[in-house]
Amino acid sequence: MDSSYLLTGRTRQKQRTRDALVAATRELVSAGTTPTVEQAALAAGVSRPTAYRYFPNQRALLVAVRPELDAPSILADPRVVDPRERLQQVVDTITSWVLEWEAELRTALRLSLDPAAPEDPLRMRAGRAMGWISDALSPLADRMAPDELARLAMAIRSAIGIESFVWLVDVAGQTREEAREITRWSGMALYDAAVSRGAPPHEVLRS
Image (cartoon, rainbow, N blue to C red; front, side, top):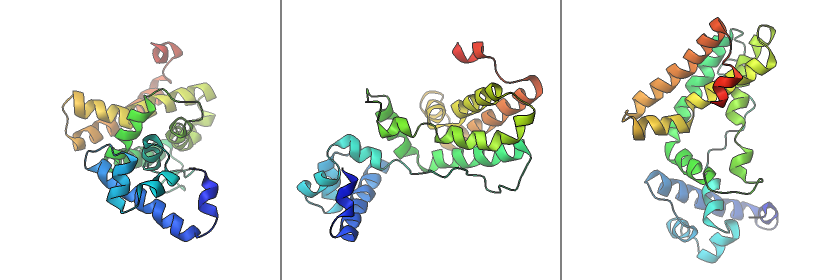
């Protein structure tokens, strides 16, 4: 939807309507459904033509329910200077969010695997967790080269996101709590290995 539509005339009512559609979609997704615009409209008590003014297709609707977590930092206590403790805060938060927002993130993951234009919102949001991890690791800047820090952040991100969580639950047969604990441990183990023995080499990340 063109965002200008929300900014002209009866803006509060329009925002309430959009919020109702998003809330209804989120409930349907949490219940295991991948709703169409029509299904979301019915659940929200909104007419189909009105719903399509906000979300022209199913993809736009499902993108809208992805959690909006755009803070530049998610440190629980930014005063902490120890990089391991900072990373632990970030890993705990991200893995908690994966558990809390599992249904929405699974939907976003499915969408991200579909062919999409470069301006796809899911692709543009892909670097947020990397930014949070890099922020946590920033005190290591005087001990590790920038490319080493970047590779470490990438390795940690690969271990703690929805992708690894889905594999642990769906393929490895772990419970959701077990999967969360494994991803938390994996993220911190990568940190410990990198700090004690150096960041993973380019060859490992390319294999």
